[in-house]
Length: 150
Image (tube, rainbow, N blue to C red; front, side):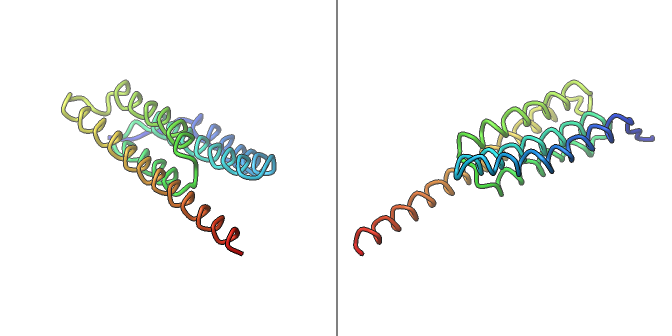
């Protein structure tokens, strides 16, 4: 009836917080567009690892909703579609493996629904990212046409 959280979770989360304070600003200074993309990808990976650590260290069924917060962060970032899929897919797979191997979901139906939930949400996030990319290209082309007309 009690949920115990290991001491390692706090230590790992502290290290991830320090990494999130240092790594993304460093990567954003590396270059113009690509540096910002790497910075956002690093931030999402760090947040995703924090999500996985929280799921793995908490033996509660309530931790199964944590990947939704990670996918929400990926959806809010302005990453390229390929980078977003490469960032989010491994974390979603790790979260599913934790749910499978930890015994948080015991029936095949619940596992199937959880996979459908994670994959469906991931597909919606990637669809949103692809629309963001096409809108960015369209705005850039419109700006180019205005420059040519001037």
